[in-house]
Image (cartoon, helix red, strand yellow):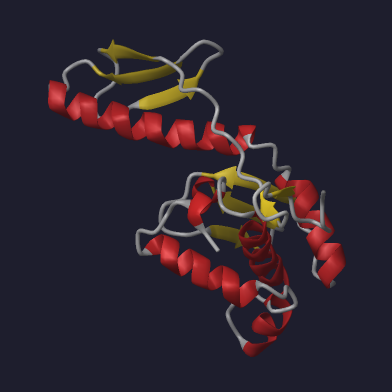
Length: 191
């Protein structure tokens, strides 16, 4: 069963449509490489069989463990977002057409800890936080519409809100994200 742009499934107990939450891919093993060429920074990348993290050879074990854990969490979150089956660019194009908004040049997942999404209106690019990979589709749609509105109105003026509020669940999605910011982050237990 599907409805417009929302990904839905049927709840067997009630027979009502609910948003489908994609399963996260299995975790990859981590390979740490201590590099004498690195001084302060670390780098990580996803390989077919593992996550490879390169750290400075002279790091203390505690600092190394903290840095590796941080990088692995970020990469796993991005990997889960990309594996979730959501084609952000296609979704944004459909939403822009439906609500009469500017078309983006690109829409991608990005690691953002302080924002749900961001856009560069001059280039027409939108980046959506990987933290939104498992939220209900109507919340993701609201965030995308918000950023699409910024392509035309780069501030939060009344003209911007007129565009953003074309999405009928914008206010409800804002409440959802506010609750998520307050620590209620399990998207599987939402109303």
